[in-house]
Amino acid sequence: MDDDLLFLSATHAARRIKAGELLSTDYVGAVLDAIDASQATLNAFVTVDRDQAMTAAAAADATVASGAKTGPLHGVPVSVKDMVAVAGMPNKNGSFTCENDVPEHDAPAVRRLRSGGAIVVGKTTTPEFGHKGMTDSVLSGTTRNPWDLERTPGGSSGGAAAAVAAGLAPLGIGTDGAGSIRGPAATTGIVGHKPTRGMVPHPARSDPFGNQSFTGPMTRTIADAVSMVRLMSGPDTSDPWSLGSGQVRRPPLNGDTLDGMTIAYAETMANAEVAPDVVANTKACLDVFTSLGAIVEPAPANFDWAEPAGRVLYQAAIHHAVEALLPQRRDKLSPSFIAFGEWGAQWSAGDILDAQAERGELYGRVQALLRRYDALVSPTAARTALDADFDATQPVVINGKECGITRQSWTAYQYPFNLTGNPALSVPSGFGEDGLPTGLQIVATWWADPLCLALGGIIETHRPWAGKRPPRANRGLS
Image (spheres, rainbow, N blue to C red):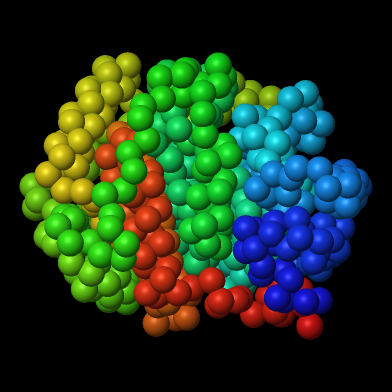
């Protein structure tokens, strides 16, 4: 199987298809064959729709042959996390409790990517209702990291991350409720972007006004992430936040120079420990920025990331989701999903209201920080990938010390920006001492997504990553 074909960028593949140099049927067929070959090792997909994907690819080739106009992602395959609606395809949410959930309509992001020519090949795995930072469930088993099969690809968009990293379609749609795009992106060495709240519509099953989850792109290149964001963005009545979309802020850049740009660096947030190799790779990225003229300063030492308040909001929401399922479906639920729900049962209505007030104070502090600085930079995760069978109810060990559950330790950098709504991008920063990827997080003020992506593009240029590929054996290829 041709690795060069599997690892084409989406923008390059679309150009070749439009020019008649590559048939979409050949490209999509190769991706589907690679998905089939990888399932026994990676287990990144829960549903694959070969027939519909190949029918769409044949139609894409016919469009090119006719000379008709094509979209920016014409004939290019995309995977969709199994918490995002695809018309006619089961939406299992990593759970046995959603057996009758077959959407009649595409989610806005899926509909818009299809209108730009992209072809859905299947749904990627997620932990039950996306509740944790690893990707395993009673429904679909364990998804593994293509760089090391003994490690997790992160979660909850771990299937999407593993697929993109392994060449199983260059584009993946993920969702991010507490870091679920950025964490897996860092863990698997790809690009993952959580947009500004409302930029990409994200229909919520419950309270759309209190929604802290986001739909965003997972890709191997910045250019592909930009293409996805452009297509997916814009108002939709399914998401009230999208109806008040603000003015997108273009990056104040002049070519490849960052003269006058100010960047705040947070080495830790709610976490007490960060691995030395993560710090080294992060500082190497900061050196790129300073070499181009940026001023990098430590973030204020008294900055409070409100981790306890975030935990109250997160666990209370899981308790609300799991409580109704327990009486009749307990034996079909993932143990960590039940445990998270039990933790959430301890929080009172007063606790939740206090946490919401703290979220408002955090929002104010983040916006004040980003009035002073153009961007905030940190590691995306405090260490490389955890073991694939790691128990999310247990403490994470970093630098030989137990540091609390994942949200207090490994992924502490991610959740604050779900609470505040700011755009946050993860790009590869290098590889750790164990040979696994590490990530750099770039955060900016609301609607400054182009700045996050432009800074990510600078790191991509000076510390390129897209040419690096996981071992073929881990992808089921000889």
